[in-house]
Image (cartoon, rainbow, N blue to C red):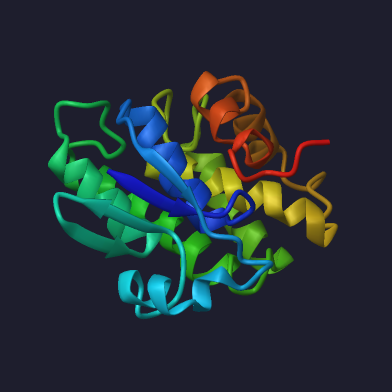
Length: 188
């Protein structure tokens, strides 16, 4: 299994988190977006969209972080689950997942949407976004909140998100997934 990634990509970070939480080994293949390597003819054969992340698994190529994570969740059900069995709980988690991945990320952390996320998590959060187990919602939250700091989003009005993030950053899988800990990250 190979993950084509860029250390600073929030979408690729989601997949790294899922692989780490599920304990699935993978080969990291760096694609330098700053050097525009995603536009090479070779990479275009893997990803016609010329986007990352890309996961090569079992002779197949998958693109889109949420689709990749969903595949991993279903292919490896014996590994740590990121989605509960209960359909209603899953639906609530997917609400948060798509709020972040389809609405907040493209707008780069719009304060209105982050406020909506805070209101949802006030009702659902335990230690993490949904109770005391890491779910897919946490996996999409981590890169988005980390990225929001580069856009100078004041997180003070969002205490639930801050508390959940603090708990998540204590986990070894999260520490291993950080952009600075990736093989293609610049060493300072």
